[in-house]
Image (cartoon, rainbow, N blue to C red; front, side):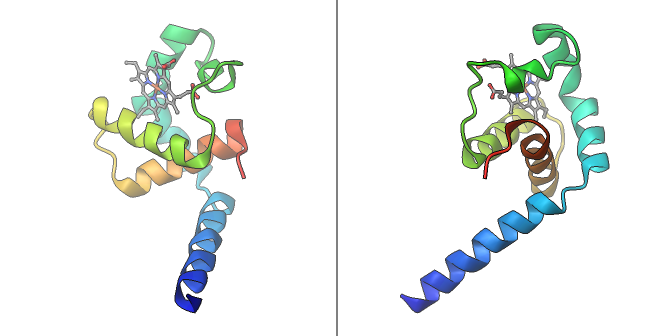
Length: 99
Ligand code: HEC
């Protein structure tokens, strides 16, 4: 019981830390290379309205992480899990702002 509480505390602390310390430069580079053009073609402008449209599909951090992982695999971006985490944290910080 105590152990699982401790583990949960540690987990949420590291998620919060990852969000605080997001490497925006690295994230943007990854995103621009593998994702941006298609979003821009489909949604216009720089494509970021895919994240901000009123009926956007992602509603929490878990869905965001899953979506980024799914898209990076589907597009053969060749990202490591750490790249996916960086981009998910950056998208959250920039657009979604989930807590
Ligand atoms: C071939 C085109 C294409 C590429 C490449 C692409 N996406 Fe997307 N993405 C879409 C489309 C279309 C949607 C909207 C799908 C929908 O409405 O269900 C979308 C939606 C998303 C969403 C959810 C937005 C919401 O509704 O909240 C995320 C997050 C996302 N993409 C991330 C990425 C990431 C990260 C990459 C790069 C690894 C990527 N996408 C590459 C076409 C693409």
